[in-house]
Amino acid sequence: MNTKDKILQAALALYNQEGIRSVTTRHIAAVMGISAGNLHYHFKHTEDIILALFEQLVVAYDQIVQDMAIHTALNMEDLKQCIDSSFRLIEQYRFIFINFVELGSWIPSIRASYQNLVARREQEFLRMFTDMVDDGVFRADIPPAVQKGILRHLFLISDFWISSNELREQLRGDEALAVYRQDVLSIFTPYLK
Amino acid sequence: MNTKDKILQAALALYNQEGIRSVTTRHIAAVMGISAGNLHYHFKHTEDIILALFEQLVVAYDQIVQDMAIHTALNMEDLKQCIDSSFRLIEQYRFIFINFVELGSWIPSIRASYQNLVARREQEFLRMFTDMVDDGVFRADIPPAVQKGILRHLFLISDFWISSNELREQLRGDEALAVYRQDVLSIFTPYLK
DNA sequence: TCAAATTTAGAACAATTGTTCTAAAATATA
DNA sequence: TATATTTTAGAACAATTGTTCTAAATTTGA
Image (cartoon, rainbow over all chains, first blue to last red; front, side, top):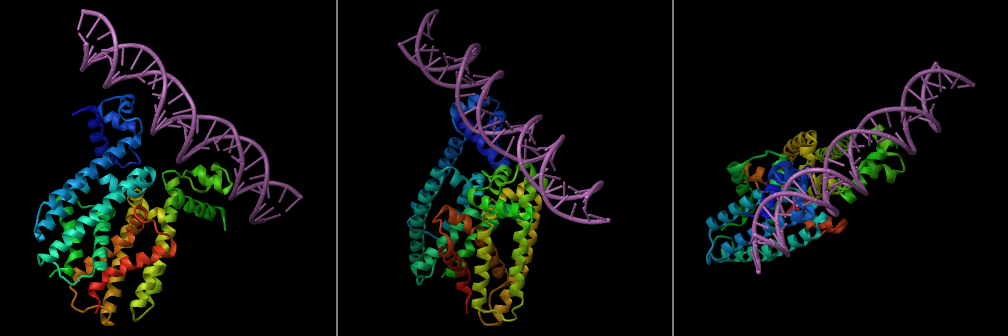
């Protein structure tokens, strides 16, 4: 792994652990055992580090979506798989979700990129949804407006569940996953066949 | 209004507009036309300002709950009223909701106070819920576990709707309220009688 | 009205931060 | 091997921040 990637790795770990408020380029360099000058040789500005991490997240998310897209027929088990892997991803990039609004206004391209991601997710999940209607998982009489409403809930909960958890129970690992899965699935339960 | 309250007012406006990252005690003092030294005479530490604002929020929220509690019978209109007034409150203290996790770990008593608030809200809303079951608004066959799940959704959405909106459409004023109301009400629709 | 208490402005401080600069070291290339 | 390029460490800088200190001004209360 080259220095650039090592910086991203160290930065991610620190941001997740300490929060963006208290992490500085000096801290990142220190835990890596390199100089701050060297760090800024690889990433001129702090934002460049954060933006690179955000782009990693987007790439990883698209990978999940793509993995899901290869299924021709979707069942409840696939949905759970999808929920689980997106949770792992959210957990991995915790700090982004915890500081989403702040990052979005600090680094405008993050906000733009997020809106892109939302659009892609919407498309993909609407497709999954209709697939699962066809496969008899969901009721067939759900109006498109309600479907869109379900997706709004889904995205709001998945984007901010980790923040809510941080303020409340602070569950970790598998315990967190179990509750997250339950919280997300319960959006769907009223609409199951 | 005394200087202390004026500081809180100015700080709230600035935090909401500029975000906690870029607002300093010097900025707050500057827009007020007082010296930084004077500001720190009234609030020794920045956290004291933020904590005071958070306490204002909690007091105002409890007022809403209390106003709701005087109703003996609740209908759908009361629920909408409650949603509206809590939205106004959230909007008024935007910065707190946008930086909730960060504030919670920075100022531990905020996190503790939030957990208290959550507990009170849970109590109050469960009561409202059963009232509205009695009044024939909601279905009577909703298991307690599902009721709790609904509340989890409700709180997560109301606490983070403003963050989600900021990243997405950035709706303002009445337009924001209308969408918020719709988003919150749609949690309940599957359970209406 | 006069002393005591409170409030205020503004200078000062120490710490921190992001970033730049310089020169040395390491690495690649020919 | 010799030269060019890349990478590195560490000093340096300018700006900012939260906070403290001091002394003056203002207000309060007897």
